Image (tube, helix red, strand yellow):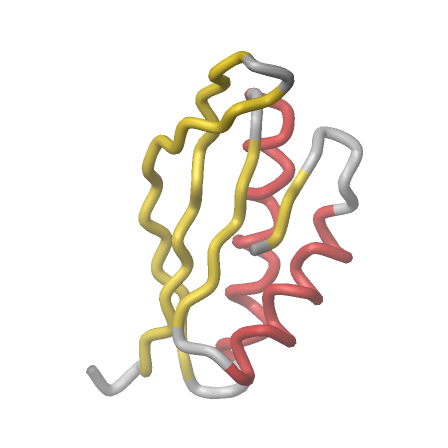
Length: 88
């Protein structure tokens, strides 16, 4: 699970996504708030360019996920990133 905040560097997150996708077919990114989601989407777009050189693409599937933080329920967005080969 990669947690992205509003202050996360999209290039650094893209590097983390790329490295994790070398070993896994599916990873999850968790964000809370619009600014965090913006940084995560930028990172995914950058990572797509990196992984294209390796012969695959990334598919993003968003969903809501409830978290308990200090006895309060907060709704986060979970981005499931799936690796897909170009020839599929």
